[in-house]
Image (cartoon, rainbow, N blue to C red):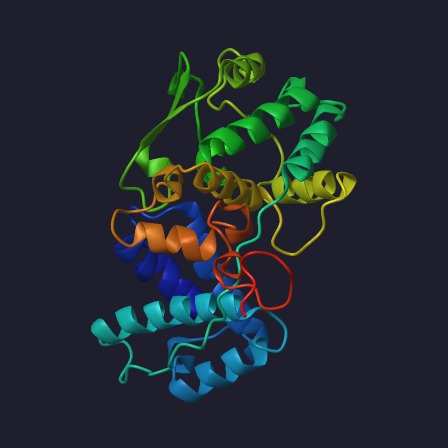
Length: 296
């Protein structure tokens, strides 16, 4: 049985019945990558230790360790279900790789304003509304809510109630908890201006789904913002960093679970250079300069 067939006929209905389209996309992407490595359609028999380890090692030379680990998790999940259903005689054991922890880096306010300025200069229409209005409203809601782009794109006109935008649980990551965001009057006005009567989405996107990220990259380039990790998620990261710098709760703002959520926010989202905490050099005795704090 091919992995494609197993995924569509067995794994998806049993494991992803309530999953997001993004989760399904990532699983299929892992299968495609494995297929390119083998130069043929992979089968369940290919889910063995050596074949998987060789594949992951080859991927490590072309993609980030985070992508490698994501693909390892996807393929191991398929193998686990196949083993549980006795379609695989042996459960492969492929240990996770070491993931370097990146230092979160947020935009400066001037960077975000540059992106907003480019959004205001967009021409043409998107889904029947001026492209400039479409982009400005989306970018501003992403900024004020810190919500993921997938959830925002699923928002419907009825989700905007006065000054509040309600994102249902099924549209958010994990699909378990909805969230209501309070928006500024200016942003509410911007959102209201792009709602087309009778539309099933606030931000109607009439193009292929992946083209949204292509357009976003063009906006970033026009704003002079470059880097592999930039995009919609950088807006989320930047907003969380400024919330934390102002003394707010970044984990709550990001919608992370209680407990470990604050650690996740600090480790992966909050730019420490924006905080108000005094640096260590200010706390240490002066040893190289003049002044009352000079050690002697």
